[in-house]
Amino acid sequence: MSDVRDDLSLIPAPLSVEAPADVPPYELTRATSLAAGPGAEGAAAWLRRELGAATGLPLPAPAPGAHDGGRGAGRSGGAGACTGLRLSVDRSVGAELGPEGYRLTTGPDGVEILGGGPAGVFWGAQTLRQLLGPDAYRRAPLPGRTWQVPAVRIADRPRFGWRGMLLDTARHFMPKDTVLRYVDLLAAHKLNVLHLHLTDDQGWRIEIRRHPRLTEVGSWRPRTRWGHRASPLWNETPHGGFYTRDDIREIVAYAAARHVRVVPEIDVPGHSQAAIAAYPHLGNTDVVDTGALEVWDDWGVSRNVLAPTDEVLRFYEGVLEEVLELFPAEVSPFVHIGGDECPKDQWRRSPTAQSRIRELGLADEDELQSWFVRHFDRWLAARGRRLIGWDEILEGGLAPGAAVSSWRGYAGGVAAAEAGHDVVMCPEQQVYLDHRQDGGPDEPVPIGYVRTLADLYRFEPVPPELDPAAAAHVLGAQANVWTEVMESQDRVDYQVFPRLAAFAEVVWSRLPEPAERDLAGFEARLTGHYGRLDALGVGYRPPSGPLPWQRRPGVRGRPIEGSPPGA
Ligand code: ACM
Image 1 (cartoon, rainbow, N blue to C red):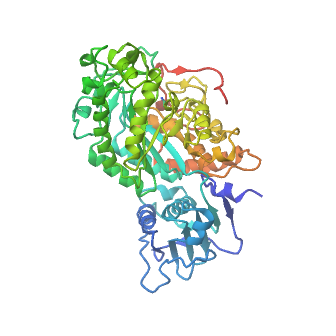
Image 2 (image 1 turned 90 degrees about the horizontal axis):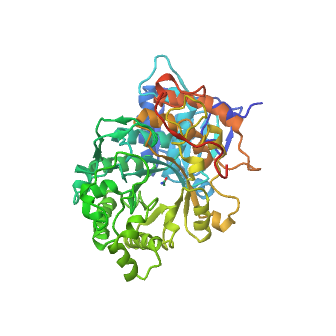
Image 3 (image 1 turned 30 degrees about the vertical axis):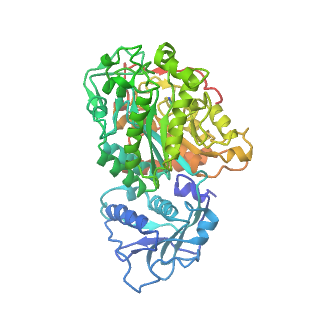
């Protein structure tokens, strides 16, 4: 007998699914109502809008007195007396499955979703949409379609609280609509963190009112290398764009309504050439003519880094003040300050940097970077926020409250977790989605290691050497989408899907005992899931390889041969 979970093609796989033989499927009709108890209104509004568009059904609130109005009196057996969908927050589900957990039950008269909290109700509503089949992802009804919810009893909860994706909007600007669309795609896979990489050498993407040149100058570049560093080709079309303050507010609110937190990243003190091009005094003016710098048109790590001066600290405090205003603490408690790949040679040569090292009694340039990061750790903590940075922030001593994004493998995350710091695992060898997903010659602009769908599915966020106390510091994981060789949404879709579906299951679904995931079962469910991605218009990589228009013949990448370390 096949596993009922395979037949339903649910991705990520729920904790438990039963298919009671004595309950018929429930059919959605024009008579179906949609009731929301306190705390479930947001999920109900979302479901009415999405399913209403796909099915053409009105899904009205039930007439007063028709039933208990979705108060969710605490039973988890049936769907009550009304015919319809009933969404509510339920304390006992919360106690059992946590705020993001839910129970979804088909009864003779409808479907009940009880969430541990509002987020749990929302994830349950996402499962309901999956149960209705791929056409539930369309934006207008197809003629003659009927809508059956199979008879199921589902109990579900996430394995990790941080289930994320990084989108690099700096190397190639991704228009606001692409970001909003990705919020929906993350939510459809029960992912709940969108890490927005907003600044880098190649572009500054967030409007900062007090420093307008960051976007006037820093948000565009005259040309772009076409392909990776080794490519001799250039795209001579100017490239640019940025999010206005209202764009950011819209993205944050849109994401919050889908229980997705947006983590803004302002990368310091490296990866800052766009900012220095806009405001030359931010750079090491005593060793380079920063007035001559432009937003970088090439890939790699720029040597032009911020100067370790009080003036620079004040400038970035001003930037972060505006960032905190746009990303409220309730939805974005973490602020990412980068900290990665900061070449120190300008600091070594700079008399200003060297006198700062002496004045502060520091040992070297690594400690100078640590001083810089600690400043913002304290500054953010004083404002009720938490700093997170790339694992280089461990070098020279980690700031007390800081969390770490472990990208250069697992080692930084292991060291940080063992020292009692929270960690988000995103090792480049495993979950960098810019890395190619096949070793064949048709892979577009191939870079990095071959990281197949199956490799992503086998990714394990918690390294086995961590003891339970340290393992508890692993908040979760994220897949990182760096866009040097992704010039458009189509290219992002190709690199991200279907691998993000495998990643979603890794971070949501319980690790089986023994710790071996069922790849064949996942692949069987993915066959059904492709139908959803098709209905959503996602340009994923087909299992047979890239379609002709997904290839980039003649554009050179930078493939790394062999297996990644630790694979
Ligand atoms: C990174 O990939 N430089 C965080």
